[in-house]
Image 1 (cartoon, rainbow, N blue to C red):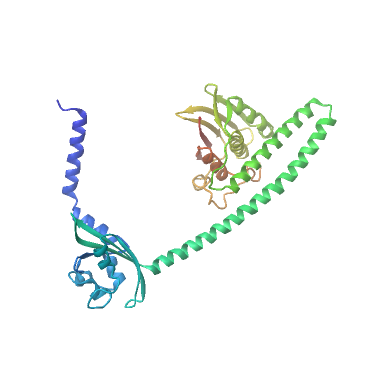
Image 2: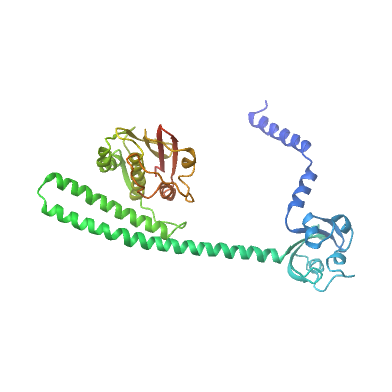
Length: 379
């Protein structure tokens, strides 16, 4: 009996054979050969051109039809015999690949030439010549210099941002923490002490976020040290929501939290909480008074999903499509109560989540609300 595997192999074989009949293989290879940007010439042992690609016409100012069968030195160098140190001759003598840089006065060009022998048994049947104008290489180097200059400018900008964040944010936070400590010591009101504790926790959280952001800026696109904190759900989400409750109450926004089953994951707690805080803050900002926010958390394969939904004003498609991109420009909207922009931005959130191996997905409809799904590995 014929097995399923044998049937599959037979089907694949027939498909390949059918494809070969439909496609002219020789024509396909000729098309590839002619689209290679470097000049390629195949020479017989006595220097005669067997074949050449279209780039050869441009490099040596010739027509392919005119040079087939001719000895290469006659049109490349304009001589009656091979030049001294001819790469083809050296390849034939040494019986190995040759790479040379030669100056060709006929064209006033420096050429990089690579010659590769083609063997049949122990005999050399032909050689392949790959030639390139060094001027093209110099142009590429100049382009690389420009790109390096741009990278240096960006690095200077990153250094400036690190300094700004380190000094301009840390100083007022230290001041807030100092005054808050005095309030805690002097006040006998339990409610004030409770609020003061929340302020203290928030200041500590912001300080941790600043340290992480500075670290990300310093080691942009390099390895950032990630903490492996054990995070328990739903406790982790409940603490974040509790800290944001005062902002929700201000706009009379209700918030529901739904976690399928209790579970725990290991990831960087500071980075993850900073992203969730920012997304919830955006949900509050763009949800009208009396609106709703819901937070769901569940396991999906090897990822934990934290889905934050609101029934706010939503995003136009042009904003939704670009809001996670670092190159976005001019993405700035006031909230439903005229709130100005705040937080670290969804593009930075997206970068942070990628650092810890996750991703952010956004669905939104104008007038109906927004769903933001934060996905991070379970382990």
